Image: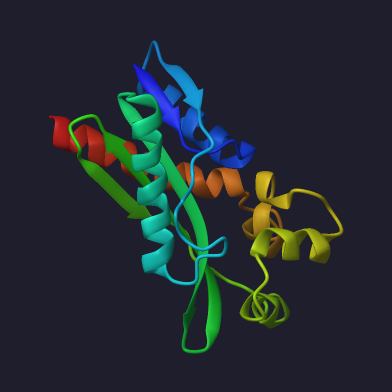
Length: 171
């Protein structure tokens, strides 16, 4: 089975590989740097979902693999509070698109204010943690859940939902 991943981000790639290898044998993975065609910092569930779908479709166009994954992180505001939101999509060769969302968690106001000022979460988190490339490891979720959930684990849940929906429609 050919699996195409629409990112080179280590946390997202690990999530896809971990879950796909659990459910399928004889899998070949390819990674592609594809655009999300949304803002660098998506600012709603709708925009974040569209980014995941766009990545999956753009990956399909590049690879024509059996399963083409797109994962996207963004933020959304509810009652004046800012949450991280996360979406995934898989595009199939027949044009079917499956999408689903995962964990949402509250961002501290000091981080939310930086995002409202036009900054992107990844660099804000690097500055906040004094680390590099937190988006490929713990991510904001790891920092703000005291390490109980890291970014790979958060995206694994989404990938498991996508695989489950794929298995459901194929049976």
